[in-house]
Length: 159
Image 1 (cartoon, helix red, strand yellow):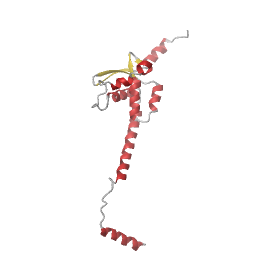
Image 2: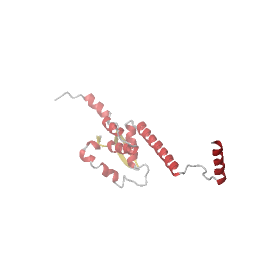
Image 3: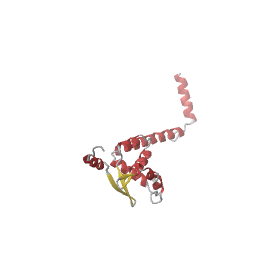
Image 4: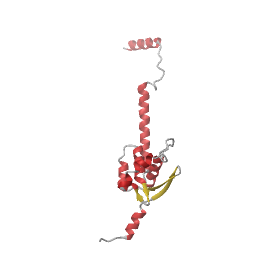
């Protein structure tokens, strides 16, 4: 049997950063993400994916990560679909609030806010492009026949 270091064991336990969190009367035990799980979050393409994964990865019970238990991990999606947790009229959802809290205790708040800000900027640019293509952002396009004749005369005179 190898050497067991009690100090190292307590240090690793202290790094778990477990927090009780209540949303809409539902009590959760949340655990900060490990470096590997943080890497998985950073690979997500969207803010929503990051928050969803953080919520899944951060659930814990009795100081154990649910995601690390193969049998319990199968039930994570079922938890989020339960009527007690999946409150349709709630915005942000319970899962989103849990995911956001997990990101906060894991030190990922700045990262997810940056991703959200970039997504909003992209959405704004896309909306501007759609408005431009649909002609919604055009100025006054009513031109009289006299203005056209005047422009034609000016153009032919200049040439």
